Image 1 (cartoon, rainbow, N blue to C red):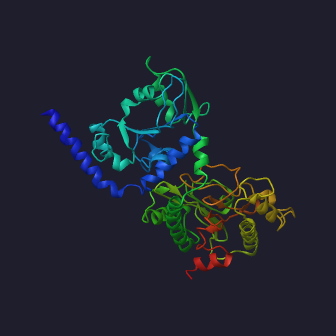
Image 2 (image 1 turned 180 degrees about the horizontal axis):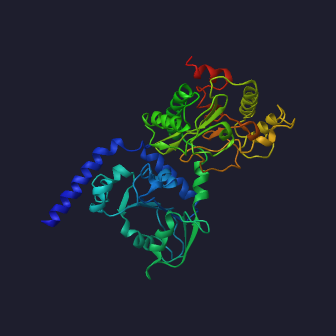
Image 3 (image 1 turned 120 degrees about the horizontal axis):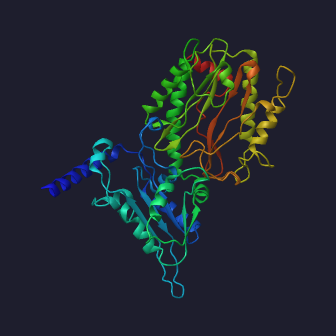
Length: 451
């Protein structure tokens, strides 16, 4: 009787799971994830790749619910906790050592029916549709991982790439690798190497479907910025604007903010990572809003600067126009296959923006403004708002990144940042995903007036 109850429970959980798949994260076709796994296997040069998914945690850091490890999701599209992924490149037979075909296995944790009453049903390897749902030909229970590793790596010395943590840090592999090694039967000849640089090189350039997801996050975030433009006025709190924006992008399908929203007015417009959002906006100040949502794990990143009263003062407009001019100069200087996100070098977009700021306008003491541009110009955007990628390579088709010059003068309580998110198309053109948002001072003022 008890066994029958267990089977019925598993069947019911599977039925509920399949019924809710339509409400899960938007995933790319299975072939996209498979192609990434094959590309990573080629970079591993014969080494195995072993990755672990994030685990469910309770507490204030899990406010928006479970979020999958970015690299694990990039390679699998799998959004449930506690899984593992093993990739082994094909190896030709040598002398007495047997060859090995290309192999990839997804390991799913055993069912915990008691826990699933609280966290919802999970897919298990026994499900008849598991290969169709996951896109893996081989799906096994996580408890089999240690034995599979020992069998597949045979008796030769082996290299395994995983997310090896930096000294003093933890990663998803920390406890899991320790669990693997806690047995006399587990091989002791494994060299553990960091897989993250290999995956970062793949994530540097996005495919068209990834860009489409970034666009969805961006469209929802632009709607939130338009709502904020209409709501800003003296006496409104920064927190109210933050809450309004999260509502606007949330109702358009974003699961969570892509980062802690920044709504900084007055002096706090000059504080780069201000996220208290605890002030009431005052007439005559500007407010810097750096806020965007995340859609199906993909982030956007947008910043706009507005006058709280609806009209820039002459000084505020002067600084605003310099920042906008620096952004436009960097965009105009872009060359596919040549421009870089580095701060130095002949093809540095940062240098173009910095030189523009430093040669236009002065502070109250007659000094150039370059020293008030205190952050980088750009970063990649994707599965993380500051996405993994190779900053040394020239920007080419598939690169998704920001251009965000800024000037911050605490003495004047005046900070201005304008941040757009752009990508390089197949034909090498630079496409601004946030082109429809107000850019010029006049456009900002008209939008705030509802025109």
